[in-house]
Length: 177
Length: 211
Image (cartoon, rainbow over all chains, first blue to last red):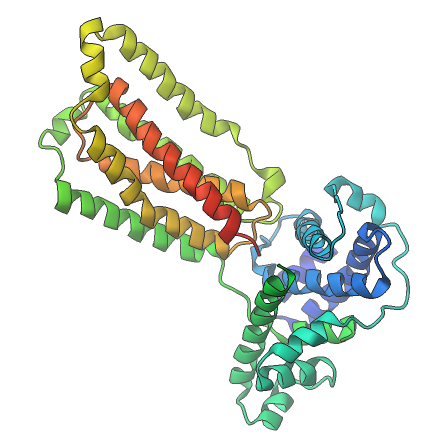
């Protein structure tokens, strides 16, 4: 099993530090894939699509089988989501999966711009879920701190956070169609 | 929202969904049990069920439907994974289909010309064509629901697998009741019922398995 596999296996057994490291490792690679396939669509849109792919990876990470190679699994999700996202935005892209290995060497670009779509989607969540995602994501609060601020137990925070991401994916799906 | 902030939020969510098989096996077992029970209660098992197992033509009903059902479920399990599209192999499905067609030809040859029409139409064609799709509803739904917990990147093909798996198993349950042992009958009408359900499931899958 390679380093990605080790990280993802630890992540899936509940190690959030390994999970953060995994997401930070795959993000530049995914950004390179998205940009290479954007066909002239702007950088901000690329970052939107990238975040969409990350959300999909997050919600489907249980479909990776421990011991299976991570890359084919990850690229299959990326391909599916990238085609979907650009199609919904009016572009036509073909993403043959074999191309990905060449793209990986491509420079990902240093400065990720701020993406707009995810913030808009978070705004559509119910008040408490939206605050929760912002507090933990943007303000860097821990689950316990967020729970204190919102008068929730840590367990309730975890349940609400997970539900919030599922709702975000569902909102996005509806929004794109 | 910056991507790095999104990552921080995602990393804080340590809850993962349960593996697909944890849902699929119990759901499918339950669906199958209900189908067998429904056949038993509503139609009854054939009286000579045990004796019929001595007739190879009769046994082939179980063998062929079980093979289609098993291959369909296995295909669905592969396609439930994102990378399953490139791992899935369709040709094994052709094996029971070819065997069924071979059996059909064989039975055509061995049935006297004046008996073919009767063997083909049988006495229970309508029951067969209505019951197998009805019995398929729960097993197909169970597999589709399982696939929704996965992440298929080919929704229509995954729907096809769900339809084939569910209707194959349903036809196997129906065979406990059915007394039509001529391949001219069962290859034709079981095949038509399975094909119809599979087509419908393909269309449904293309819609409901997107994510």
